[in-house]
Length: 175
Ligand code: G4P
Ligand code: MG
Image 1 (spheres, rainbow, N blue to C red):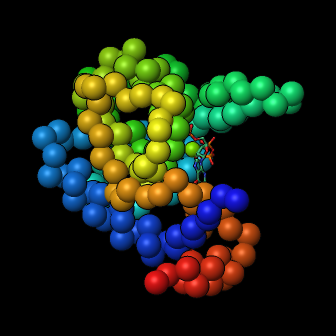
Image 2: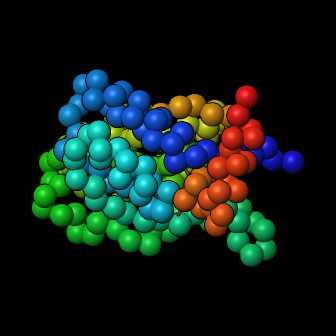
């Protein structure tokens, strides 16, 4: 059975504050974020409290298997920055997502963005799962993660239909 973990908005806010400190202490000054929706939207918005840079967005959907159960590992664009806004040309951008899992989505997004006329590219994820990765992050991309976590299924508060029950499960699991 897959192990599960629950994080509250407060847990996430604190990790994002620490993540912002790592980003600010790094060698690159980022001009804007590009959130990968849906999971990257709320982390990017909270990061903005600390980084004070504008948020742009792309949205992808990931499919790990077709209807016959064959693995496809396909990422599809739901919405894209196409064409890239003039205001992003030559700028240093920080790609934001909630979780570094297989890196399939991350690799897809980074490869698409590296074709554009951007400056430096960074990636910031709230949770970095320690596991074998299918996709890869190019070496010239600056990488930041809030915390490393076990390869468990993470329940995010923004997915909760009952936030009170979600918070109860999060606190029950705390040591
Ligand atoms: P990665 O490149 O960033 O590592 O992501 P990957 O393609 O492996 O992720 C595939 C989808 O699975 C993503 O959703 C990701 O958010 C989701 N995912 C992976 N691990 C977890 C987890 O532990 N908990 C939850 N809740 N989701 C997880 P997506 O297709 O981008 O959808 P969306 O929810 O972001 O809209
Ligand atoms: Mg996502």
